[in-house]
Amino acid sequence: DAKTTQPNSMESNEEEPVHLPCNHSTISGTDYIHWYRQLPSQGPEYVIHGLTSNVNNRMASLAIAEDRKSSTLILHRATLRDAAVYYCILESLADYGGSQGNLIFGKGTKLSVKP
Amino acid sequence: DTGVSQDPRHKITKRGQNVTFRCDPISEHNRLYWYRQTLGQGPEFLTYFQNEAQLEKSRLLSDRFSAERPKGSFSTLEIQRTEQGDSAMYLCASSLEGVGGYTFGSGTRLTVV
Image 1 (cartoon, rainbow over the protein chains, first blue to last red):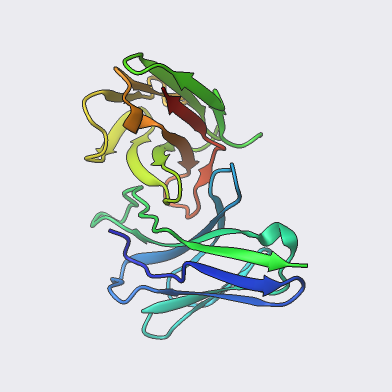
Image 2 (image 1 turned 30 degrees about the vertical axis):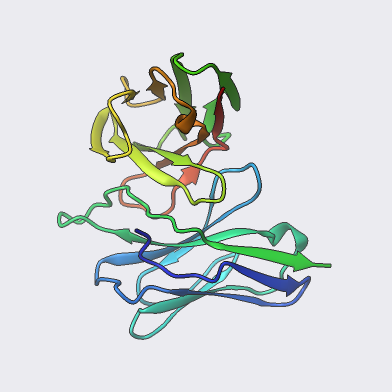
């Protein structure tokens, strides 16, 4: 079972910011929050990840709530190429500190971008 | 580096036939993963390797499925006696141990008729 909850779909206008929410109320202290996106007929593409602090990279920003039970992926200026399914995923670290490699994907949020 | 490569991109096979897919990860990545994705669903984890060792297998990986990574580089996923329910996109990903972020290939789409 997916450990995150996301809206099924969202719409945005081109060149406007997009805030994609994710709830993960059962997150544990060693869970990283990952975001991936998937364009049609492509494999998922890594977007961003974080643990506690907000993170920025060239693709997006990740805002993590203080209690870590929710997070928001922020696309600062949506383009038509950002239309995709966005997945919010928790990555658990094994007791020895290493990833078990088992990303649990939900159904994600399908983002549509209108010109 | 051209990223994670998967071959073939598409495969149509008759029920009961065996199929084999290949994945070439990013060369310096020591971890390799296989996922399966059906229409309208997110990818589901099948198995992963660290170097040549297969460290975890999902319950989804029935005894008709076998994955290998003999030299710790490329990997193969074989499905024996295919069934219509095996029709899906099979995705491969790789990563470097201890570093966040997985790189996925474009997948192999299997259709069993």
